[in-house]
Length: 103
Image 1 (cartoon, rainbow, N blue to C red):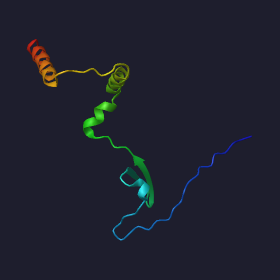
Image 2 (image 1 turned 135 degrees about the vertical axis):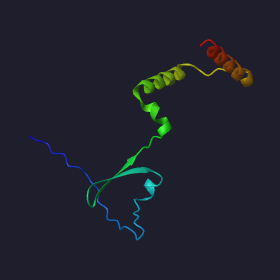
Image 3 (image 1 turned 180 degrees about the horizontal axis):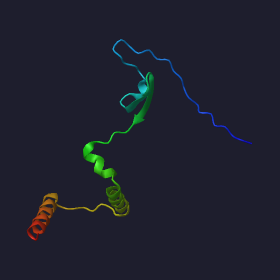
């Protein structure tokens, strides 16, 4: 016996306004969409997530793995009180200066 899958699709009639705009509904307000035109008069509109250029590196495999490792570490290590934040930052600067001087 063969099984058949029927795709449930919604068809809605919309009118394109005189300014060339069409409303998809308030539930989609603020979302980014991709609009593809595979054929003249045929549009495929899909919601999408846009990744800013300066965050693209986070999605490369080698960095994604390091980021996941950092997140895993953060789950198992509770935050510690640093005490004086100014002294802490000065200590970090001193470490950077020592590293820069040893190169």
